[in-house]
Length: 473
Image (cartoon, rainbow, N blue to C red; front, side, top):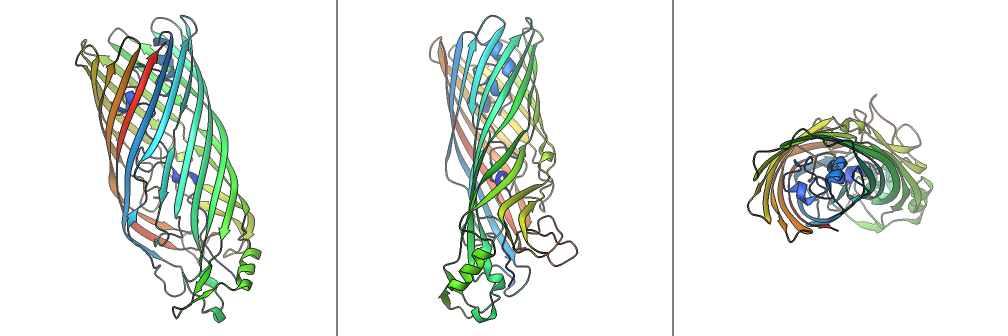
């Protein structure tokens, strides 16, 4: 008896932010930058410049601290979902065809500290969240075999040092230590090969599921350059390297407690069937591993002071998302596949490199109050609906942001910002073919999969509220 089930795929980084920024990124690591739709990287007004352009630390005197908290209210909804099994009866997957896959509110903190060692050198440390998300489909969703729930949390520790070369030029270099934790849940169609004495085969009659957890440390670096052309204009470059992760952890398989027979009756799962599933490789606890590589990025930004009140900002960021071309989830045990035993499931998203363009401005309304705003267009790396992931129905988005900075005294200030992020409506055609063309054909890829397919339409947006406190010692 050969069993098929859908993989623990769509890979761990498929769990990353679905509404904040395209691809993997959370979208903002500073409230002062968020208020301009992240166009103000050349400003270097507070310690959060460590993330956007660390060379700007040379503009900060003494010791500076910035602590930010972002509250994200995402909404990613799917509708008109359909799913079908590769073979057997019934062909259509039964279950819910619509729902919301995001939490109501997500809280994300960021912290930065800089210290001026002398007139030429400034050191800093950033602790921030570059990727964070949680998505979950209903357990009975028609898309449950592709992926049912994902969760990813990362945190970066970024010690950086900046050098003032002369009155116009500054550079910086830093090391990034990134810790990633991921969880996912996925259902398995064990009913596809139920024996005849149990009313099989009966798709959907014996669903089990697996829960995977993994974590890892990865390391990268950042480089920055800032040029004060004159008293009015500044331009800069910021580079952030890719980071490799080998996420290792465990996969725990939960077997169906009941079997639904073709006539609609249910019986307790026979001990012999449970023993067979365990023997076939679906262990109560086995190892799981996936290698991922976050994309590198390069940002060109500038500002221009029109007069003592008005300043304009611009940022153009290129991201090498094409590094997410293929990924493999590797299990500790072999499991039945269409071409023989296998312990891998394969994801082939074929993402494209992208760009983000942001424009913003600030207006000094009064001595303590500065008003800020911006707009940004963020291009999605997803090349087509056939490559859109069910857990990350990413698409092009536009940011609308506004906020302000209020100086409490000579040493401290508060930033506040609100952003509305509108994501273009999209559709996804998902399948468990692991990069193949279809099951049972010359294009079959041997992998751990149920070989189901499905489709859905998505509507998404997000509200992002941020508050940041800045203090100079």
